[in-house]
Length: 462
Ligand code: FCB
Image (cartoon, rainbow, N blue to C red; front, side, top):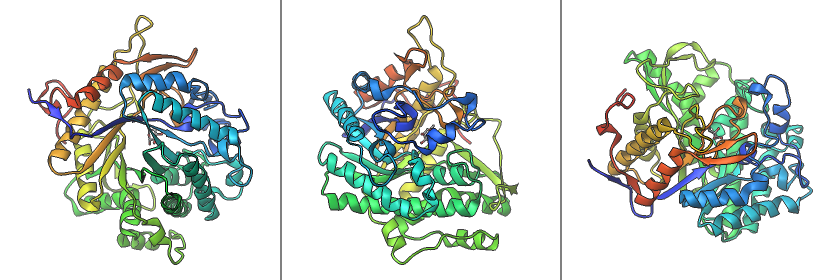
């Protein structure tokens, strides 16, 4: 059976984030974040879980960096907790917070793992929320200041930098359906938040270039693939709108310097207030970056309907696909299609900054986690990625979400995505079968077989 070998220098990694793994929510001078606050409001998070302790990465980073080394990761993404370094988001600086990231970076380097630092993965200082948070344009300057501090602390040690993680999820779950902090429900506000987040992105890229730090920088977008449920023109148009809202709004802004005009017209006709665009904003937002960060988990199947004002769509869950514990359809062909589309439409080298799946993992005999389904999920998606590369897409790296089980936002600790199991009772780490398998993939720089040639795997076409 054909082996699938990835390009030489292909970067293999895994990802995690500050709020989801660090814990130590109020230690060593850290300020409160909007997630600390959001989790304390009853009803927001399943089971009343919080990130107060999470994986206790704040205290266990050295042990965890060893495990990253055992996995053979070329890179591991971490994110910066802004209120750990600037507790109120503005003004007073907390050296102890920055010292923590220094220790983390050093431990990773000692274990042969290159750090990938994401500057913003959702934990805004609560004090800035009280001044409007992402609805206040000023927040973008405050984040650029934080970034400057971090760039100057790590002038050479960090080869990869991310600005904002998934502006779509921050805007739409934070401000449209309110499932995430700060829990607002207003579509016009979501577009304003998106604009300010994208401004912050542009300002951070410029600050990075000015800092003279080495390494590459990019933004990471959340990029499901969107399929129309039929060839009916109304379904096709609805699907294009959905894609316009989730994907093109952000990608066109960052890589083409404009918001898509069809979406602007649609929104105006539906009474949405569009954000004010100051002179120079779009140039700032589209400041050139070095790579295209792509997160893919599943695809959407969209037709015309009455849901999700102002988009007026319906979303269906096909019965011929299998689903993860998140109830997300498993759709590796959608991964291929989204990678090809991003490459063709935007033409930037791609790093897959997240891909992975939650399943109901169990520990056997106190030491084994037989997570065959996760292996199959990753294998099928890596096969699809390999196909995209063979078909011409310039993909430089792939990162699993996540290295370790962690706090899955509104769904708390029940959803496990890790290659490494975390027992939250005693913080014990257990390498899952998928972790051992992934270490082999990295060693071989590829897969033993193409999932399309294997029997008994989930649906191979849509
Ligand atoms: C992504 C987030 C990440 C994690 C995964 C499952 O949207 O970036 O923090 O929650 O989903």
